[in-house]
Image 1 (spheres, rainbow, N blue to C red):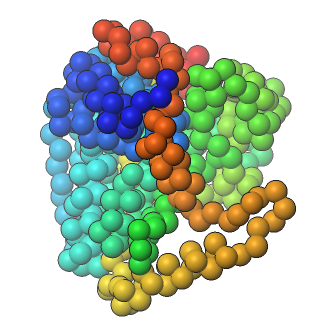
Image 2: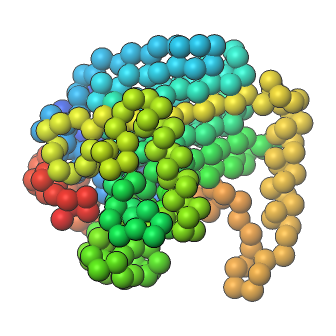
Length: 349
């Protein structure tokens, strides 16, 4: 099923409102989800709506949260999320961070006690659109074996970066610290597809291509990814006084309780370090030089981070965003959810 961006946004917003969110919160969440699907990041788009709806309906997401923003220094602050919709809390915290960076050059804002916040690329691009450099990272529940280990300890713990250029191009780098995000496995399951044998291991610790036989994910680049996911967990967990590592709450075990997750935004104002126009010009020059580099056989051309997502957006604007029929049928149904997630393990099984 192919839908326009506007239609998809409306369907998701309506479903989230039906689950219990107010219009503003539902709009904020749907906007982040639409951003993901519109970039082809379907693992963080409409596929998540039913899970959110079930958690909202069962009380695991605060529908009218008491958000509090406390600036703890010229360039530091903490945003209390009251276990409200993570997308909305992270968005509001980034808005504060941008204003602080405009004033003081740098902002570091911790966001604590929130639910899942979706694609981090959305938040760092908020900064880039204001001529800032944005960095964001967040923790997630354990589903990755530490390098050399056999049982999960850390989550996929993603990190994202975005920078403006001197034209309409924008660098947006958004990665899980695993070979692949769990959402990609979830997307493969929804489409009844297999996965590469480098993504995950089964219960015996052996590589698997069966998306329904995943026991744990693998860190990207072995010990390097392991170190990165530890760094993300410390900066978005321990630094904010929320649970860390194996103690991070399960996404599915108990949907009646808040998740108490942490996230960290860092915003840098280039104008405090160099001439802003020169900075943006240098970024554009870098992108031009990269695009002019000869591509290796089989690659066609070199893409800069975020470019392929924007190319997909252009295609979707013409052809519509492809949504799995099962997900579309759920979105247009009268049902809020189908009791599919509560009490499940880390892989929704």
